[in-house]
Each structure stands twice: as C-alpha cells, then as structure tokens.
Length: 243
Image (cartoon, rainbow, N blue to C red; front, side):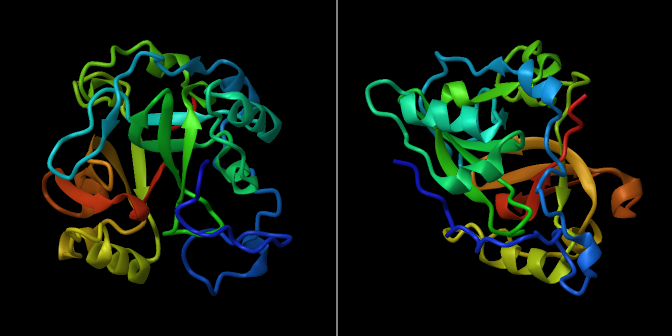
C-alpha cells in the first residue's frame, strides 16, 4: 500500500501559503484549490507510457525518460484508480492523496506499473507528500506529451520550447535547513548563490530523484549570467503553467 513521506497535516478550515508564518489570515486558502490544473486540462491529460521501464533514481545517475507528471483528479477518480490499479495488487487509497490531485508531481521511481510521485503540499511547505500511484493516475497535458521522451528531453532540456519551471520556497530559513540536511545521504549544502534565488523561478533541467537542477536567469539571481544550482526536491515547487 502507499505511504506518505510525512504524516498528514491536521485537518482544519484553512491552509497557510508557504513561507512567512506571520502572514495575515487573509492568506488562508480554505479549499486548497490554488496551483491546481483547470478541469479542461485534467480532462485532456495524456496517460503515462505504460511500457516505461522500472527505475529507481540515484544521486549518481540522471533520471531517464519523463520525470514530471500531473496527478489526475478529482479525488473520487484518483481514489477509484488507486483502489483498482494495478489489477493484481492495487496501491490503495489514502485520504491525504487528495492534496496531490490536479498538481504537478516529481517522479522519483517507477516499478511494476506504478510511479513514486513527490508532490508539494501547500499546507506543509518543505514537507512534500510522496505516494506510489498507478501509471493510469498520472498524465501530461497534450503540449508536453507531444515531445518525445528521449532522455530528459521531455522536460525541455533538449532545446525544445516545452520547459518545466520550478520555484524555490520563499522561506529562506527553511530553504537553508533543507539544503543542509537533504538528502540525508549527501546534503546539497546551502551557499550564497542559493540564497539569491529564494522565492525565485527557474528552468527545471535535470532530476536525480532526491535532488533537481534548476537554471536561473540573471533577472532572477542578480548574477551577470545564468546560474545552475542543485536543490533538494523538498525545497522547490513545480510551477509550470498549465496552458
């Protein structure tokens, strides 16, 4: 069965946006709908490749094929898929999976017709949820599915105009802690260049499972040239426009 990376956050009437905990209560999003794909995009998602080979990501080996997918919704549909796929041994349903519906997720492993997906949860910034989902539960908007899955080309690093975007969390102290502690086997380490891009967006270039490489423009970093940085997956949010 599936298991979230972190315990489900206590239920309440609202969820704080990531970052400054001193923000006023007007920043609470009671329905968790922000940053989700619109219904027409979800309806048009192209299913994940059922023949993609099994792979466990490694810090020493770039993730091959596609490693960013959208998780299907609404929750009732995701629940149906999790309770029925794979047919031989369904992954099972957890209530916390509803947070992942209609959001981008980072694939960290593929195995036995399932994908392990890490999804930012706005109620617990810096502590994303990780689930095993059946391949049928994830897909791509047509403009991404049309790009050949050749190495990391499906994520835009081959020069195509389809490039995923990611944003660094906007809480500097949190980002510093994550960089100095994640991944546990080899922390990224917080450096000055990372401090310059806290809260900024960059192009998502490469994934090695627990870490991702982003490219930041001079406008984002304040540097004279583009800057490429490795960050723990917990410190970034995929924010690629849905359309």
